[in-house]
Length: 483
Image (cartoon, rainbow, N blue to C red; front, side, top):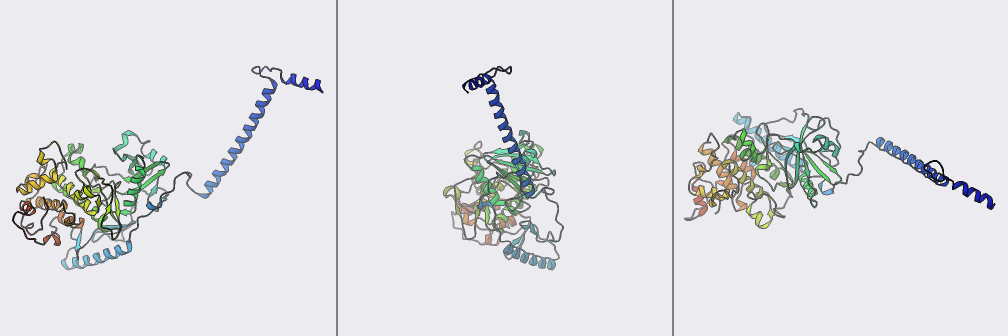
């Protein structure tokens, strides 16, 4: 027995021609390879089986996408109540139109201190005097794409979808960038051009901006708001997909490279600002909860081929629910556009947007930046410079000298009056955006509440400020600004 064991031992210890390895080493290697092969076959079988099950269930292949937080799933809009209001306004509009033999009275219709414009609730549109609900729907930018939304609206794009659309986020496709991230131009598989905002995940800032934009404009539709088409939520990636508006923004036309293509005329500037005012009126007064943009500035007003203005970038937006006069929040925005009471106290409401709009309107009128340290000391702050010029009865000198054709004195003074109303240091005295719309429309009335004459005591600074801008139609307006 001992001899046979010794013989087997010596036999297994013999070296083979294969790399000089001993027989027992080769046997061990063979057994290990056999075990690995069996395990590999089992893994392949299990993977194929799970794929067949997934295909049969019809679910998206990527199951690692994190759940969307509850608080950004829906923006509730009391559409039934608003539809009743708009239908009532539409009925009154048609009655007056038939009596006066006119089919329309401009973009907004004033009836019992209300107004009707194109209000949209989750895709349903009611447009006073301009559209019929019986018009056939037109194909949208998402036509031909499968509906894969997890939020109940829009389209869910995979990371691969957006990589293909933007040529793997090529630098050649960059439209703009800032602290929030980078915006790329892209093209969907159905040929629709889009703008893809890739949010930077700096300490969770991407998640905050993603939530803010989805909450603010995920459900709303208005012709003067840049439409949010969909989103990408994959791993740590947060991206938003917007309609592509290819004619630049107001800042570029006033101060940037787009000026080489020519200067905006007076009518074009007022039209763009009127469109912006309508968008803000919709956000503030036609939906619930109301949306405070919080970052109205010239670079956030995009311009399409027809020179229509569209409000964009809702990354700082806040919702203001029914019964709330304001919210307290960290001061955010762009220097020169932020309302003074918000900058000082952090108290935010829609009147903060009104102030910012007034600064943008003044920027469009003058062609100057809101704050320019390259100018003389008394001209650094644009709003304060306007008050100085108006107080010295030199209001017509504030007009942008680049405009080849000057507007009428009446048009200029009406626009400046709207500016002064909007930038009033007392937020309570600022008008609603629907009132600003009527002030900017050609031959639009001065809001009734602005016609109350107040006593003008000698030495009243605001009365002196208004003297320089008073005209026949302005003379009975209330004070515009406090100095």
